[in-house]
Picture 1 (cartoon, rainbow, N blue to C red):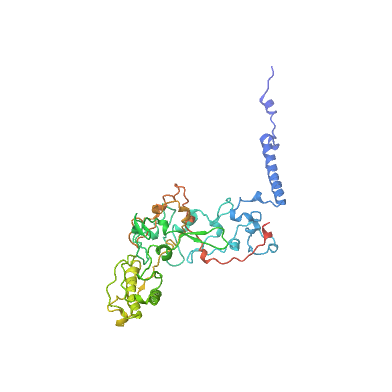
Picture 2: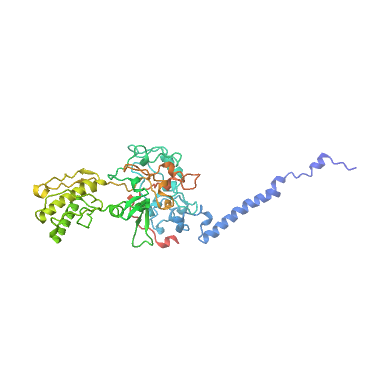
Length: 446
């Protein structure tokens, strides 16, 4: 029988095993040496070939894709990026963070507001290397960081101090707050113009919103197609009103008066009457026939016979202008100085002169939300009445804009349509932009 004592068993144990790597320890040592060496060799091969993708933070935005292989175009270190490449020496190049100077080389972006606190640098909000994205589409958190508790360097802010994410923490639009009024000096009734049987030049008709409100189109000589601004084209008398509301002023004259200043209308009417009676001298005392052309749908008051052509023109001028100033024009326009009423006998024989009215400027609002950007083009598939309650509007003072809840029907995180700040608001005031001085050549981006 063989007996193994504890001493004999202990002699089998290698007391120096910890000095020699074995098993997993050996592989761990080998991999810890081999992998860094392989990584360095791999990066060196790409660097020698001029390819920097191995140590890039990721793809740049679509607008900057042309600079993806020339990191130093933006990562220029402490040097001004407009410094010639041969004069940059040993600058840190692409290892440095992008400076504002690098951005301003191509984008001379104006400041947000004159009284804003020192703004963060460009890269704080416009973050690159996140794929082929648009840098202008910044995350809401960058906006809310300031506008959640807005501070200014001087004075009170002219906008809401506490603005959060739309729609839950966004204040109601200022244009539709309680008490908001349309400031236009124009008498217009939407409900009347949208009724089913409206009297038009060819009989009864039904107007749609698109009959008057059309997207504004800008045509340039170099554009492939007409460009839309996103706003609706301004309403004008000639384009939108003249078809149904011509300014006829006399049964004998086939021409309508121009939609112009009262002095120009006065001169036109006087010239038209003088020209008519010169061609038709026998009509001086000819009675007027019954006439039903709007607004000439009532008989003239009886007058003594005119003595001559000059007297006839003076009588007709006074009567026609009384119709224009006191009935036709005031249907739509407010006067600051009303026209004097005509008296008998006519002004020509009594020595009275015609007082021309002064009409208040219409002051129609072209853009209701100047601090936001709205584009009608992607919304044209929706019926106008879904957002604008014009069907029941009887006053010009009614503000027919949708409120925040109407927009949130589609524009909300759970609805699918974009609802981030950049969708409606622009950070930079591009109206104050300055021309950019060219700084690069084509070879800088090879």
